[in-house]
Image (cartoon, rainbow, N blue to C red; front, side):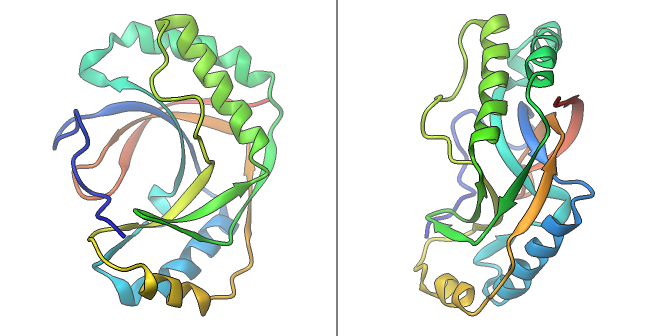
Length: 200
């Protein structure tokens, strides 16, 4: 494992970023599963940062730092995204069981295809407005993290804790995509909502 909380290029305390996520407010089955993983992994704190329900998310597609993009361009991206997302029906997705990434404990999302369709629609909207689309189209693996590694060290204790957990996968109903303003000032991804765009 390696520490997830190193400062990536461009990031620092106080800086904010526009990004699209799927979030899980009111998704009780997702919260149930996340709580089971937090309970199983709690003995490993503070080597792991456990993610509370409020900040559970599926990372989709960034736009830019708020000080590097005009707000009218953000509004144009939202406008371009609305009809594209309206063409994608709402869908169900299942999370779990967990896998261990070098920087996190992840719950893969299945099926991945509708999640990818949402991301592709958002990327197309960004391309319509800005021309260049940040981040790569390939290499995207839809998932929800339940914990981040907060130090460098072996993964064996995490694997042992997960092996003792027999958790039923969670199902979420995805009806919207959220544009948020995110930061990582407190060793957690925290955000303010900017707008919500419905699917279907």
